[in-house]
Image 1 (cartoon, rainbow, N blue to C red):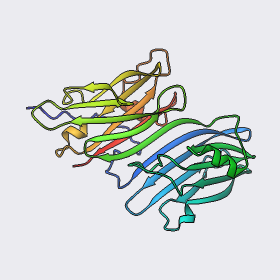
Image 2: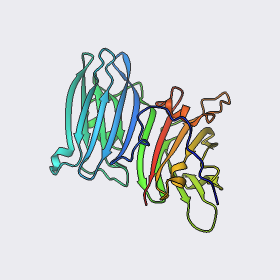
Image 3: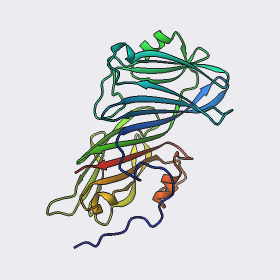
Image 4: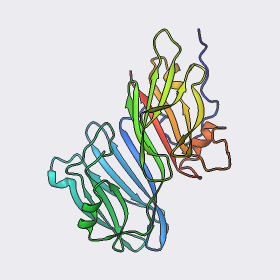
Length: 286
């Protein structure tokens, strides 16, 4: 008979999806983008509830506290509404956002899987391009690709599942996305276990999850070191085997730094001050 271990003694006082059970799925990505002669952060959020499906694009305005947010309704009943253009101004620069989601294919994520584009144009350059229809986006915007590629610096995602959680993230040195699958076995005659697979290969196996519900390991993806941290305390000790598990996929910045010394320090550093981080909040349902 296992005694119930306590959660971490001090959780940081910041707003996070683990505080209360949310009512929607979302994927948020932060990009560093060059607009004219300045770099700024652009936040892209795909959010879905039972009654809405929305894309938000927020452009940081370095000269003002108020940032500009472009909202695109993806669940509109009007077919033509899934293709459009919005124009706004940030720091005296004209920004055009083009999108075509008429043929977009979705899986379990609020973010499309394929057959779409969202393009942001500034000074006749495509400074941010999302989706796999690059040629169609360049043709429609009549703009050239930016010489400075947008850099993905942070990703936060919230998903719901009973047993198997799937996501995609960039782990290597290029922009290639890798498939991540997290599986667990919490019931039955054997000790609870968890597996984390990358591109179909089981990279991490965590036995004795009763005692190892919080931890970290380093794996190699395309000759690049990636540290994976997890905290699945609530999966085991919430009383119903439901609750949130928190995972962090973090590129090794080099120098042999142990990024897992303090799990909540990593969360409090969101977005990561060093390198790319992917925060996955995995809500296990009954």
